[in-house]
Image (cartoon, rainbow, N blue to C red):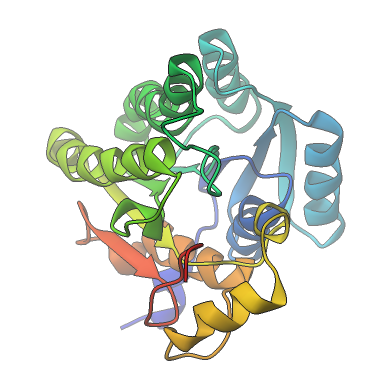
Length: 259
């Protein structure tokens, strides 16, 4: 067994949406470290360029492409530019997401706000899967990793749009695995627990963190690199017979906003 090949991504191209910061940035850096050409996709182009430049400065290969996943033409452009620059697409990390954080009380949220969460978290992911699949089939290698959440299985107040959209991602992932499997394309999802990001910092207090850790056997919150490690597993040849799975990276426990 040549163990070096199990995680070798040399020559493979990965698109990471929301790649300029947080979990997305950690995924970009992790995939690049194992040899992938990385497309840092983000609506904040300047931040995406900084992440991409950092990868290049450290010996990797990366470009930045601005992309608002709510706009179909932007998704098409993202795929077209990736092919134009690198010639193939083997890995897609559907990382962009929005909503949640206890801000979705059914007494206050409007229908348009609820719909936008699904547009961002579900419909954009499905569309990107549709766009990259032909290129993955041509390449003979495909791994799609959708970013779900512990919210997809937890129950908490004021998070019905986000949580239900993430639950939809879980089941969409399992079904797309059947659709794309015959073309050697794997589709899996990752459900992060409470992970230290800029988004979490807007609601995290010392009291909330302490309460979360009461229910977390590995007694710390997650770091972006913890999630990126799972992305690497799904992206790499080591998981070549793994598809239709949802793995929760959560320290062995549950962290919700109402603990």
